[in-house]
Length: 185
Image 1 (cartoon, rainbow, N blue to C red):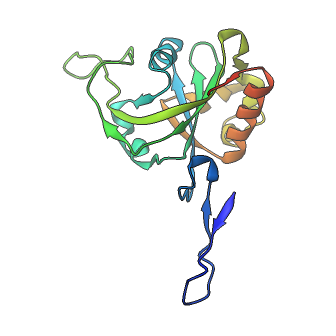
Image 2 (cartoon, rainbow, N blue to C red; image 1 turned 60 degrees about the vertical axis):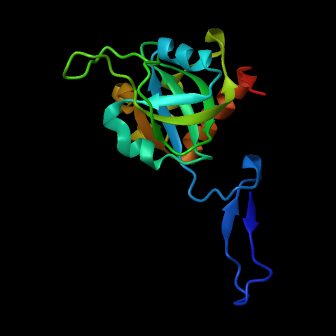
Image 3 (cartoon, rainbow, N blue to C red; image 1 turned 30 degrees about the vertical axis):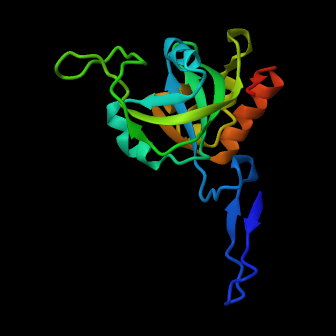
């Protein structure tokens, strides 16, 4: 992490804005970390688009609005109870209506949920199925999951989108890397 300073600042004060040089030197203030709860089929839908876009269910607009370029995503797979990938958000949120991801839930008119709130992304680490990380022992180490009793750890992953602390993202990212997940190029 580097810090943006102003040598020509007439006040002489340092601006103190963090810059993440891994994102082309763009200012990244208050980066956020997110867990996206996804079915294996929806992860495949994201993979089939080369991890370039990710959608969120209609009820998660406010969370999508909070996502900014530089934010980090972790993919948790429902049913499997595994972590499978990490990615970086590369755009502000936008609305899309093409049906990419599917859900058991439908809209009130019977149409399928189309995950309308979207962000562009780029992959970081993507595991093949044999490299997915068992979430239960990881959840017991996560700050975010400590809100729930140990025996009910899966409650931490109910819903589509969760904001988590940086240390939780770093833990999962490190474990995926150690498990041999491929680094996206």
